[in-house]
Amino acid sequence: MSHKIKYYSTNLRAPEVSFREALLRGIAPDGGLYMPRSVPELTRKELESFTDREYYEIAFVILNKFLKNEIGYKDLMSLCRDAYNFSVPLEHVADDCYILRLDQGPTASFKDFAVRMMARLMNYFIVPEQSHYTILTATSGDTGSAVASAFHGFKHIDVIILFPLDEVSETQRKQMTTLKGNISVVAVKGKFDDCQRIVKRAFADEAFRNLSLSSANSINIGRLLPQSVYYAWAWSRSGRKPVVFSVPSGNYGNLMGGLIAREMGLPVEKFVISANENNEVPEYLRTGIYRIISPSLNCISSAMNVGHPSNMARIIALYGGVMNEKGEILRSPDLGRMQDDFYGISVSDQVTRETIFSGYNDHRVLLEPHGAVAWKGLQHFLSGKSPEELNGRVFISLETAHPAKFPAEIRRILNFMPEAPPSLSKLAEIDEEYLTIENDYNSFREYIQKTH
Ligand SMILES: *Cc1c(COP(=O)(O)O)cnc(C)c1O
Image 1 (spheres, rainbow, N blue to C red):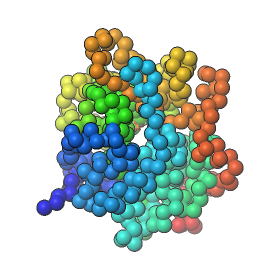
Image 2 (cartoon, protein in one colour):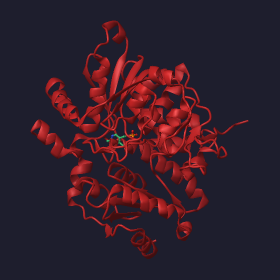
Image 3 (cartoon, rainbow, N blue to C red):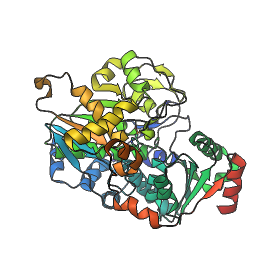
Image 4 (tube, helix red, strand yellow):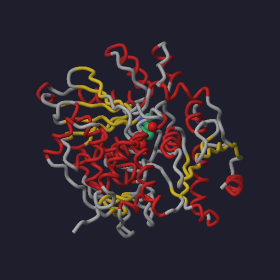
C-alpha cells in the first residue's frame, strides 16, 4: 500500500489533506498553516550520495520522499531539472566558514528556489484537470518578481501582482512589468499594507469566484519543501561535517526549509537566527515572551522587515506548541529545546553596513544587506567559542540576494558599483507594462472586471 503524506493545520481545527490540496489551497480553512504530519527520512547512503549529484538531482531525491505517491518520479525529475537550471555557489571565506550564494536564479533572490518549484508543482496538478487558476499576490519587491518570473508563460495560470507605487525599486518593478503575457501588474497609490488589504478582500469577494484565486505567498507548503534542498546541497559540498547555518530571517520560511532538512536527517548542529532590528524572534528565544513589532521597523535589509513572521506558527508547532494567527501562544512549545537548537541575534542597520565594509576589506566577499545580517550573526556566534568547540564543524552563512540589487547602498559603503548579472542588466532595454490605480478596493475591482 502506498500512502500519501498528510498535512495538518497548525490551528488543529481543519481536516488533514494531501500535498496537492495543501498546495492549491495555500492556507487551511481554519486559518492555520499546513505542516507535514510526518517527515520522511534520508538514509545515510542517500545523504552520502549527494556529494556526487547535481543540485536538481538532490532536489529530486528530497522532494520525491514527500511526493512519491502524488507525482511520478520521471515527471518530478523533469520538474526539478527545469526549475534548477542555475548555479548554487558555495564560497569558501576563511577557515571552516562559507557563504552559500542563493542569488543566481532569474530574479537574483533566493525566492527563486521556492517559487520556481511551487509554480511547476501547481502547473503539474492543474493542467490535467483543464482548470484555470489566478495567482493574486501583493509584494513589497522580491516576491513579486520571483512569482512573475516563475509563472511566466504557463497557459493555465494567470498572475496578478499588486505593488505599492513608490515603495519598490526601479529594478524590482521592471522585473515584474517587462514580462507581460499571463503576468499582469498593478501599481497601487499606497503602501504595501494597502496592497495586502486589497488582496485579502479579493479572496473573500464572491464576484471573483470564477477566477479560482490562489495565493503564492510564503505560507504555502509548496514553497517550503524546496527550500530544504540547498541546506543538503551546501552540506554535501563542504565536506559532510556537522554544520551550523546562519539564516537571514524575515518570515522564517527559509529557516523552516532548514528545519525540514534537519528533520530528514541532515546533521545540523545549530541554526543561527539572524534578524535585523525586527527582533521579535531572538527576543522570544531569550525571554520566552513573544511580542509582535507593529508597525515593523524599516531596515535596509528590507525583505526582513517583518514584525510577526508568518511561519512562526509552524516553528512553534515543530516544538510541540500552538500559536494562532494573532501570534498568541495557546500551548507552549518546548522553549528549552528551541534554545538548544537556535542562536538568536538581532543586527542593527549600522552594524549591517559595517559588516558589508569589513566583509569586503577583510575577506574580499561582497555582501548585500540581508546576507550581511547573516554573516554578522555567524561572527557573533563564533566569537567566544573555543577551538575545540569549532573543531570538525563547518559554518555556512546564507546570502539571499545579489549585491547588484542594492547598488546605491553598496556604492555608499564600498565606493564601487557591484556588477549586475545579465538577468538584471538587460531589463533596462525592455518596455514596461502596468496599470496604476487609486488606493481603494473598488478601483481594483473595476480593473479586474475589465481585464479578466
Ligand atoms: C524574503 C527574503 C528574506 C527573508 O526570508 P524569509 O524566508 O521570509 O525568512 C531574506 N532575504 C531576501 C533577499 C529575501 O528576499
